Length: 400
Image 1 (cartoon, rainbow, N blue to C red):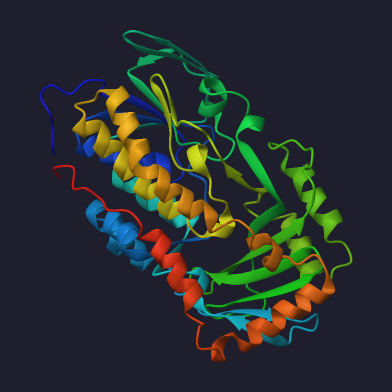
Image 2 (cartoon, helix red, strand yellow; image 1 turned 90 degrees about the vertical axis):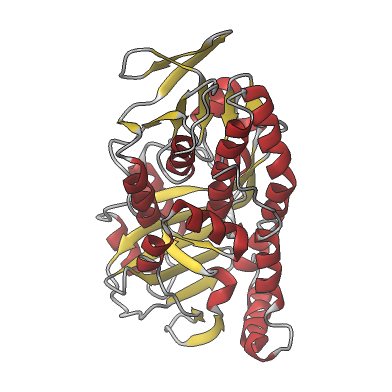
């Protein structure tokens, strides 16, 4: 344990128990702080899509946390992803290194690993949420939906795209969230196609339905993308979201009808816009943002989880290096991460146009390119470019 005798602002509340929050809790504890994590969900959220790590920066953080072996044991080991026609005939493939990086793992499995690495030394509060943040010279008074008010020295918003802390401390979501014209849904289903560490995707203009095997082929993830202007719906009303998806994909061929029938009984269901977050400054007084809450790169970038893990490492390290002085620590954290984050966000810009083409001609054109991809001399340039972006930061050791 690396403790500092004069460490200030030791008691830190983190909102969000997915990836960024527990990762930050781990590093804060290593540096001598006392983290508390509050999560709106009643328990850890299982399910979710596959996330990946690529390049030295991502892997270094996993290694320094001591969880690399656990992550590798749970990795998906995915192969190529195939585009198919309505009859299921394979048309073209995308190589694994283009979308699964060096190590790919289901988000829910990663969340469990991070929770297990922190639960013995971190207070977790499930089934509750912050309702107000009142700052004074000595700290922050926080009220909750269910629990009694408490005082903390600092508050961290690691609560995702629709960050509650950001709304309370920075302003309304509409100022920071930029929708990219797509919506995404994903849920767990049976691997009825017998997929073996691979996936199949079927597209029509403006829509993409896909499924890929998960957890050593014992199950599958159904995934849907569709283009749309901003939709009005209740983010907590899962039934309404399922109805939107069912209506949008009604009449679409391939395995879509079967997947939609399975959707109604799925043990998990995720639905949201594909968006990015742009916030001019990541801290306001004693509150600071991390991960998607600060700078969501969108699921299409392939960078969000690695960015959150690196950000957690840097935030805790800079805060410790500043002796707990939040003004200095927060400023140095943002200075270290801002350019790196912007590069990661650029990876997600424009992807929607080729992932979910709006016209049959563009879809046909992209399929021809996918067919040629294994044979062109520059086939590895895209993956190399993504890796270069992921590695574009030098990590300090922060005395660990």
